[in-house]
Image 1 (cartoon, rainbow, N blue to C red):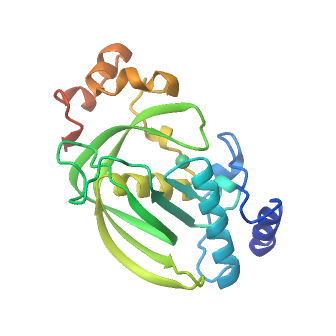
Image 2 (cartoon, protein in one colour; image 1 turned 30 degrees about the vertical axis):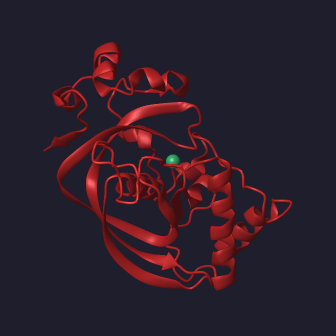
Length: 230
Ligand code: ZN
């Protein structure tokens, strides 16, 4: 099916523009198919409508990012936003938070490409709206360079290149992975897959190493540490 047709069909399944789209779950082939380049495929109006629909869906879930394959559309489009992170003060993330969690504003990108920068790898629990109810420990590069087209209010796009670190860098790695048909749990530390309801027992990664029998690089982390230099 033509991508314009498929996009319309997916958007038209809603009873109204304020309604979320269905998020497909692991096992759906859309999550495993590499998505195609999106630049110039939809036209400004439809791209804007798609981004708005993905935003409603991400917020309703709620999540901090959503990639088009998660709504069954094999296009390289993602939205990211964190309105929830509470640790950031006016001076940015708390220096005591090794994950550098911080709120960041809504942004939408077409054809995002990431270069992983530096040698610091951050270990943290991660979940996915397409693998509901499960989490695992996923190592991610602490810093990335993003090159993408950023979607504007009117559905036009503007090229951006920027460097990000910490929490937003993790979210972007998770969402761009979706465009290549990769789920976060494909990258997990083996044996770290858990039901989300147990997550509070393992906030300290040392506890997860001990009780789940995690092996490898993660065992080099000291208490309260999450970063390993490779
Ligand atoms: Zn995901």
